[in-house]
Length: 165
Image 1 (cartoon, rainbow, N blue to C red):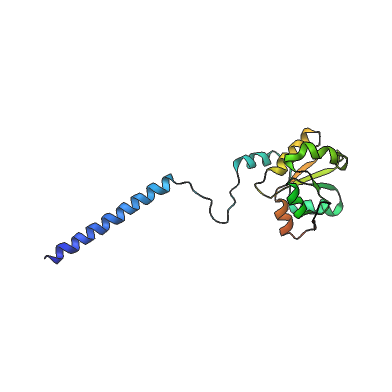
Image 2 (cartoon, rainbow, N blue to C red):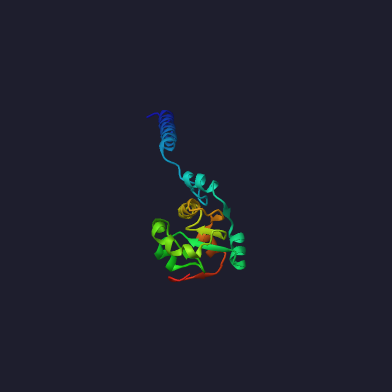
């Protein structure tokens, strides 16, 4: 048995296996969908387009309006989520029930008052949709708080639980 030949044979087979694995890895990577890097938000393009057409407001500015009582807050999430917790004083107008709920709360939304809508935070389009519906009804001072409920909670700002604002 020639040891020199066996060593060359093993080396050739090993290199062939590595080369094959490398090529397969490149091919799999090319055809597989890529996920967002950890820690980065995966924001739908449709949301980005919608929000860029809206007036937005930061948590800090929204809180300033809150403390000065210069804005009405609208929670666009569903009723159950609102009852679990919402911005203290916010009105619940879920997007999917806008046409039924808005007429009942219309008197709480004077045309000249600043209105701030919010929902589940960045990437959630419910607040954008409610803002659009309000604008169709003639409201012009409408803002979307893009950080939404999670941002408000993270800032440790006033909240309420239950059916009442």
